[in-house]
Length: 405
Ligand SMILES: *Cc1c(COP(=O)(O)O)cnc(C)c1O
Image (cartoon, rainbow, N blue to C red):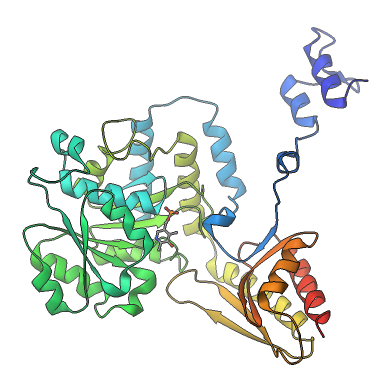
């Protein structure tokens, strides 16, 4: 017996008769499209799930917008010059985000490495090839950052060969500045953990004639954050493309001063013999990112927000009916800016831990991922849900908690 897919394939490969299905001529492409799609996750035995946790890299970030996928598919049908595409898309994005220049990178992390690499080397080919070995090259080698802004992702900066110098006060910063200082780096999502705020950071850079950078990887929305820090005067700004912007998960933006972006590009493919050759972005991701930025800026954010609030309200009102359950909605103003629902319960009433609820939801059908997993609490966000999934999430959480009496 021929499978339907094989049958269609055979039919469409017969000349003249080719692709006559139901009396209508069918192109081989249309025939392929009507063939049953492979369920690759199922074939591989990879669990898929409803994501009520958030934009987490280990959960593959976000789902790309349909328009982004259309751009990716469109791009995949033609060749073009990589540099020409980065030039043209960079110009458009720079206008949209109020920066002198911009480039699509393979994420915020690589944006940090490339931006700093550009600062260190400028357009000097010998210096470009020397990185990450700075000794004896005359290049600067230190990045100053506030202690409260120390996170794992700062590794992107030391990948250039630089070392981090952590300070707390303006006095310490001014004492730390020396002829080796290449950059003053700032982390927006932890700006409340530092003593020096954004404007002052930029002013200190200007005062000492040292470039300033800011990591806003997970910090859009608010929508205006995409251009606010360029307006403020940071020398370069990096953001993730595959978090709330729902562009490709392996893309991001490096935005900033013309000379820095131009030098950063020297560290990127198609050029090799540099530290950025492995940070390749393909034409599909470049166009996908472009469309994602356009879409992100053009959205009616009040409407997006209202949708999130309604989703959270639905989960909240459903789970609250369980005896012993308390809920609280929080919004982090600095990053992952979306209503987040904390569901907690009285352990004397409901004899289950947050981790156990998390695992039960994971093991259920459909599988659901939630955040938190505290001693007697879990966390839920709705911004990565597909329309209607909030109903499933609410129902399943209620079921699991109701069982625990
Ligand atoms: C996610 C994240 C990064 C890494 O971003 P990618 O786009 O995945 O490279 C860097 N910094 C912070 C603060 C982040 O949250």
